[in-house]
Image 1 (cartoon, one colour):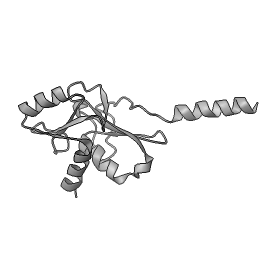
Image 2: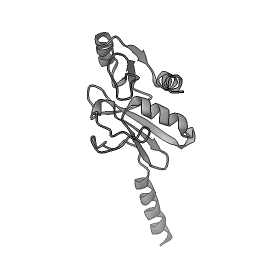
Image 3: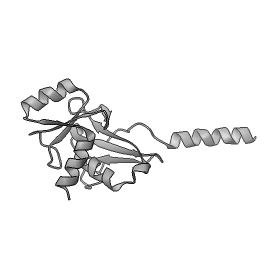
Image 4: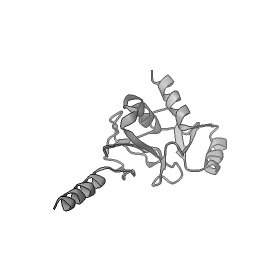
Length: 145
């Protein structure tokens, strides 16, 4: 009986802790930072806590700003949508970021890409500079003091 109870607890616990992002309902989900309705799939983002809570954002900027307010030990992972293939989530530490003339929802003009080839193409087209996740966070921190 004890083994069965322990097994059930492990199963319930594992289902409660999400490790992958969930779909954003564009046009109805609200950004957990700025409270605007998330409407543009090219800029969606999510933060997953170690307890399985999912926070959704309308932009890379809002994700970065929210992450600065959270205890780092509570964060499991952060995800951004690929500008070219918006239904694809990329872990923020593996994404290629572009600060350019592409207008993002919160005005810092940040877009995320899954690969360097697309980053280069859009960087040339929209006069952009490549950033990594740490640079994005620092950029948001200095711009939104």
